[in-house]
Length: 556
Image (cartoon, rainbow, N blue to C red; front, side, top):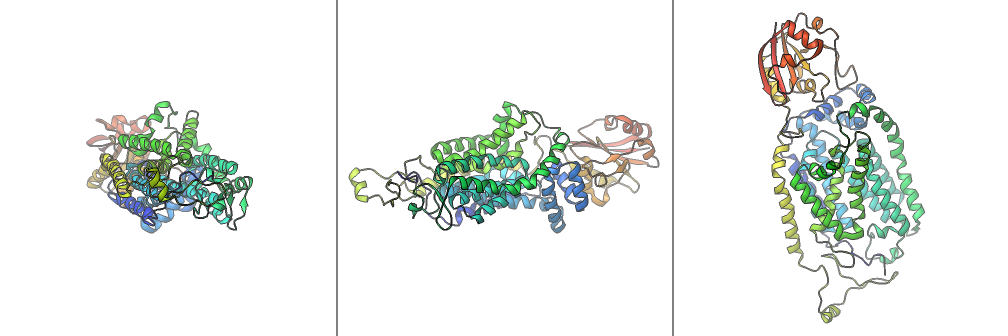
C-alpha cells in the first residue's frame, strides 16, 4: 500500500476565502471596542518602555524585562509613527491576530483540508482569547502569529526541502525567539515531527505537495526542487541548521533574562495540578468556551489519527514543558501559552469538518483506490460502487455538513459573548478587580492647582499607579515631589524616592496621594518614613475611592 493511500486533504478548492475570510473576521471582531478598556498594568509597562529613547530602552533591558526588549524596540518605532493612544498601542496586536487566523486556516488546509482550515480559522476568530490578546499592547499576539507561521513553513519545508524554504523557517523561528522566549517550547513539537519525517518519510506527518503525481513520493522520501530524494539524515541536518540563527540570537538574551527572573516573576506561584485543569478556560478567556474547544480538539485528534501529530504536539508539548518547569521555577503563567490556541483550533476544525479516520476519504475529496507503491491511483469506478450498493465514504452533501459546522462555530461565539463584553471593559484579571487609572486621573485633573505635588504608595507596586497617572495626565501631572531618580534615569520600571521624605516635602502645601486598593483612611495606609512625614505635616481634606485605587487630597 502507498504511504499516501490514507486520508488526503479535501481539494474542493475553496481558494483564497479559506484564509482571507477568517483573517478579515478576526480583524473586524478585534477592532470592535479596541480602545474602550483603559491600558492595564502590563500595557503601561509597554508604554513606559516604548516611549524611551533607544539608549534608555537598552539600559532598561539590562535591568529588567530583557525577554520583552525586542518587542519594546518594535513598539518604540510604532509609537513614534502613530502615537500612544490605547487604540494605537493595541493595533499591532490586532493585525497580528488577524494574520494568525489567516495562517491557521492555511495550515489547516495544508494538513487536513480546505473545509477544516476554514472552520479552524473561523473558530479562532470568535474566541474571546483572540480579542483579549488582539487588544493588548503585549507580545502575545505577535508570538501567536510567528508560531503558526513557523509551523506552516516547516510543513512546506518537509514537503519540499529547498534551501529557500528552510531559510524562511529559520527567519520565522528566530523572530519567534526574539518576541517570546517561552514560545520556543513549540520547537519540541517541531522536533518530534522532523524526527518522524526523517525516520519514516514526510508522508507520515504531512501530506504530499502534489497529489496528482504520487509517484514522486511513493517511497515516502522527501524530494527537493529538482526531484532528487533527500535522505532523513539530511532532512534532520537542515532542520538543525535552521535553528542556528535563533540559538545565536537568543543565547545572550536568555542569559540576561535568566538573571532577571527572580525580580521579573516574583509574583508567580509554583505550578500545581489544578492549574492544568484551569488552563482551557484561562487560555480561551472563558470557562465554557474553553471546555467546548477542548472537547472539539479531542474529537478532532481522534478522527485525524496520525495526521493529528503536529497540531496535537504543538498544543501538548509546550503545555507539559512549561508546567514541568513551572513546578521548579516561577514560570507558569497562562497567557504565556496563548500561541498554542491556533493548533487547538486546527484540531477542532478537523472535528467540525467531519474529517474521517484513516482509510476513508474526506468529504469533498475525490475517492481513489488504494494502490501499490509506485503506481498511479485511479478513480473509484461508479459501476463498482453501484454493484456493491455502497456509497463512497465522505460524499454527504457538502452544504449540509458545512452549515452544521458553521452553526457550531456560531455557538462558540455566542457562548463567549459575555466574556467578549467583559474584556472590553477591563483587561485586569480577575475582571472583578479592575484598576481605574482613568477615574483617578480625572479626579486629580479636576482639582489640581499650580504648585501641587503627587505621592504614590506603594511605589514598587506591580499596579504601577505612577505610570497610570503619567499616562493619563501627561503634562498635567503634578510634580512627583519624592522622586530623586525617575524610571528613565534609573533604567527601571520603578522610580527611586528620597531617603528623607519630610525634607523633600518641605515647601509643599497640597499633596495628591494615590494609594493602591480601597482605603477608608489612605493616609494611615502609607508605611514607613514616608507615611510618618505625611501624617506629621498634612491632613486629609477629601478622599475619592476608585476601583483598585484611592485618591486623597492632603493639605498642611
